[in-house]
Amino acid sequence: MSLVALPVIIPILGAGLTLTLSRWLQVQRVVSFLVLVATMVASIALLVEVEADGIAALNLGGWPAPVGITLVADLAATGLLVVSVAVILLVHLYSIGQGCDTDRPRVFHPVYLVLCAGVAMSFLTGDFFNLFVAFEVMLIASYVLITLGAGQQRIRAGMTYVVINLLASTMLLTAVGLVYAATGTVNMADLVTKFEALPESSRIGFGALLLAVFAIKAAIFPFFFWLPDSYPTAPISVTAVFAGLLTKVGIYTMIRTTTILDLDELQPLLLWAAGITMIIGVVGAIAQDDMKRILSFHIISQVGYMLMGLAIYTVAGLAAAVLYIAHQIPVKTVLFLVGGLIEHTTGTAALHRLGGLVRRAPVIAALFAISALSLAGIPPLSGFLAKFSVIQAGLDAERWLLVAASLCAGLLTMFSMSKIWVGVFWGEPDDPPPVLADPDGPPLRPPALMVWSTVAMVAVTLVIPVFGMAAYDLSERAAIDLLNRDAYVQAVFP
Amino acid sequence: MSLMLAVLVAWLFAMGTYLLLQRTLTRVIIGLGLMSHGAVMMLQVVGGRAGDPPLLAEGEPIDDIAAPLPQALGLTAIVISFAATCFLLTMAYRSWLGTGDDKVQDDIEDRRIAEQVANTEGHYQEESVPDGDEEMLR
Image (tube, rainbow over all chains, first blue to last red; front, side):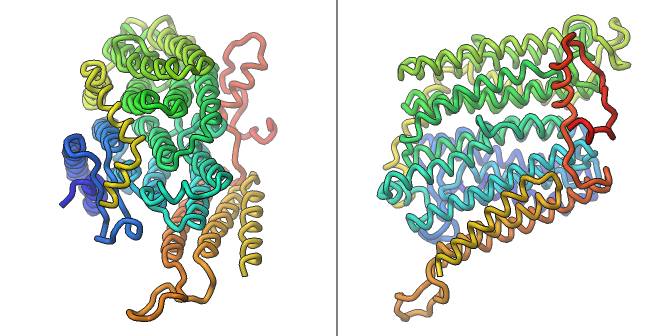
């Protein structure tokens, strides 16, 4: 029995199980937590196996590769899978602490587990049609989560999210159909040789269509407009897990597609998109007042850095992109979790209504400071290592303009983070909510489970700086694997 | 056969795109439905000439066989788009229950920032527009 399928199968079965337990909330919570722990263990075991023995492939149902559905686990996929499942696990605890699973009908836990399965399948799939299915599993779960127990404003924002994602899915289906029409296969390993045999114009056309679809999912310029509209309205734990994972899955599939189909003709396009995405995202963030919206714009800006690593398209560039994703998944999530702590205790996330929290809630302030400095790329936190490797790769490839754009975006990120810091933690609020009316009031105490899961997540963000060299080596090996397509083909067709 | 089907696929996509750009939720949903029909139809065109069987008994010559994979892909896609359409219809109904209106509304926060830019003093304006007046501001 291969481990490759377990990170997908365990949460799917767990989703079915928790659905039958919806009458007993506590049992449901414990079971879904245990299911996620089991998924985490399976993912780590898979990473250890892949790290030792190289790429692992599994043909589902015993059908041989180009006909059946293939799951492929290489270093990039499993590494990011482990980080993602860790984030999913901790946000699960946070959402229990927040109590967003208490609404009837109690479908939060089953849907959350389905989301986990969809994310795992998106990472592990070795087949473009299965990628479409994985995206749908992930997205339909996310549609439910974003609108669960929704008020009017969330229905409106959720609608934007659902419609834009359904449109992207339809385009993905069309692109997969066209690729099948031209090559007769949708298996990634099979496409390595068959796609190259196509005339150049078809390759560029199909490649551009596929990348455009994934760019919508990853919120890359010019397809980012839906994200800051829809994310901030969901419950904060849902927003946090979306912010941490969904766009990163999009950028991961862009990396996978570009390396499998060898789309180096599209490189100039990606370079421009990366630079503009970084700048647009961070400039958008500066104009905002609501903390969740500021952070949502930063998601876009940070995706630009990952795309920059991909667009440079060298071993160093891809290694930097993988490392950047691994850094960004926990850091982005933790920033939203801290935002959630603030909103939970004060009842608002608007900067002009907040102030002076450094005295009232020093723990929250410390958690925010660590993760914000990490996002801005201040040494010795994980953002520094990730940004440094992206920029180093850019310098090596002599992409001066892009390096300048990324440094500029980094500076503006710092500015935007200090704006949150000054607005929320220092000074006096303009129009304070009732809890903040007295600046010398008692310390604010969010639920303990929410605080501890946020602390644990901050600890996860510190893993990369503590094991800096090991993390970089691992992502470099992942990048070498990504560019070595022969090894991928050999794993699928032994 | 292909030209007719290709024109049909193109027509479905064109109509879908047109409806998707409307402001009414039900039209958006119908537009998405038409587009996914177009995509599924395209998968069938990809599968080869109409009329050939996708499965053959053992020993029969395999000259006249339709590719079975696009049919399987098409079925999966139909199920998914069916579920998504149901979900969207439910949301549109919820939206209609809430507002009594089928139109997509402006984003309040976006509008607030636009106002803030227009306002030269740069001070925040607290919810200067009551919820019902969104139609007027467009």
